Image (cartoon, rainbow, N blue to C red; front, side, top):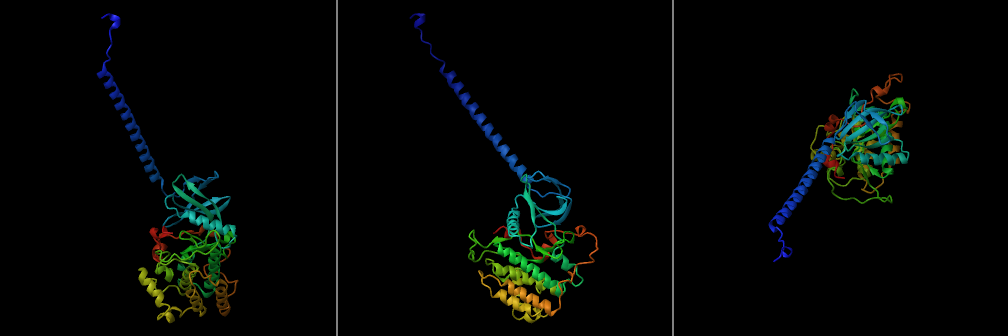
Length: 385
């Protein structure tokens, strides 16, 4: 056999080995890339988890419009966030903040935007809102004075005169009617969710309603009333919650008014019979007792029109539109009988020449002490819709 006729046999074991090495190398590279990806995701998740926070006093953030906001002073600590004093467009305002993961502010923003569109009188104007780097949500609103719970607590008798109580009744009833007119329920009507405006802004004669973390639409897109969902769980604040709330039933407009009624009784008398009770069942029984055997004592210090108002509220069905005008008429009857002049100041007002109320403006969100005393709703309840 000649040299040119020789057949070269490839080194088969060597080629196979090289192919295996390449496969192993490719698999190793793929595994390394996957490990790196998992590590990056883990770091990002940890970073995002770490970012979910509340801002602190003195901090500065930039809005979506490029405006720099400095959190000058903390006005209040709430169950879900903080409220700070800020300056915007040369005017003192409040910024309400919550952790990014909380998700309560979107509902409040929807409510306030709705009331602004309808030019409602008793609601804060919302000036801006947004999210800061997935850390916290914010909402810039009008600054208010001390809430009604604080103002009553500061009175020597822990109660208001019949003049102030009935003025509050008219203002707050009007605010609830406005809220209902734009298709929302509060489901958490209570004194700490109402506050007068500031004299500095010539709003001190108006009572504003705020904090809509538990609010809910009761109409659909065509403004048709939604039907009751039956049993849905607890909603609201124990002290002021309606009988339907104690039964864990779906709440309607009448339930906002029942909470409002208890609030008025507390403001004028100074306390509710179930003030020292914290168990929901016990408080519910006390509210029934106040309508039955305890009725004479419950209404002893109240004008007779209060009995009529509660009877009206108790008679409403879930879908009934409350008779707001008739209730206002009854309240005005009380004012006439007690010679209450519209020129009389609120009980908490001092001399007109006092220093700026901005130095005394507290928060537009209840602090933890108030929430605890009133038997506040917990986070689980708030998130149940």
